[in-house]
Length: 248
Image 1: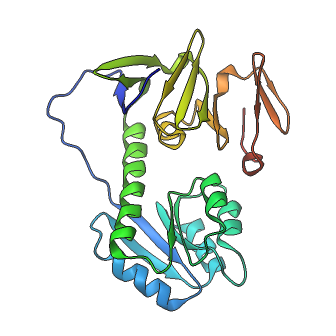
Image 2: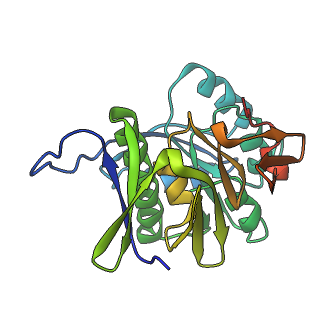
Image 3: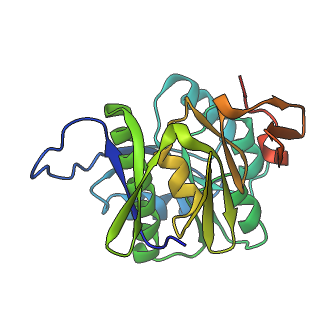
């Protein structure tokens, strides 16, 4: 069984002493309470890699803004009068990263099913806000790096060893308890990498998240219907929040 961290490897020649780049994120905040927006604005002003471009008390005005402007991150309230933050996120065809901000705990599970970066309970401190932003930045950096390089394989760390995994060998990925299982053509690997982190490493042109617990390789799909995907004899469910995914 494989444990531990992982790292991304490219097919290019290794570059020595490459400095890790930090990319600045463009953000907006949506909340029907102006005071809540002021708190987010104050916290964001102290985070050097976040630029809070706009704030909105009207969610529909925010939708119009998103149609015209590139945004990397949304701070999104859940309980709003006209549309909930959950429904707002579902309405976006290509949503940016989202950090939910709310006074209620009952939507936490659903928010993570929608791949929210974090779930901030009001009132939240600057340190808790910064922790959420750091998580978003890590994901954002991975996305940028993935766009800049062609990824052909990853390495999964096992103690002091790195096990090479060719992306073309992956059939599907399944979250299982504290592990993520990577099903290859001829063997099964298990790692403590989270399925969310692994999803950020896998090229979206070749792999697709079809369920909060499953990622599949598009070119390994033998057939599918509205609720299931077949990879050989393996039947993989399509989650309720993933029914709009494009498998072809």
